[in-house]
Image (cartoon, rainbow, N blue to C red; front, top):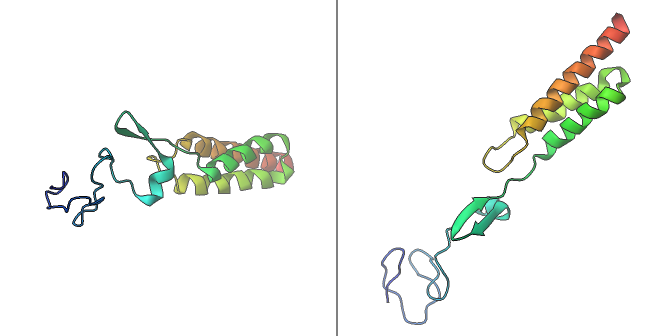
Length: 123
């Protein structure tokens, strides 16, 4: 018997190829997925589809931006919205995350809130 992946000769009854590690027998060929992405991958009709997750920092920044419209606290909440959204945008990975718009909108809402606070304080 020979490995379908690398062509190495395999002993009868072996579960894996000793050269490349490919599963032998009853299992279909499944692509190898890095451990860092395994929780975000869904197998569908023999193809891989990445299930994108939310960027938590961008989400927090967006929510703080919304809160800053109601509770300004002299622009402090707007500053926090900009910080969290900026970190979320800086660490954004387009391959595994899908809410870049939240980070951008959080920054814009934070800037608006800071500007409004400055106008109220000095205007």
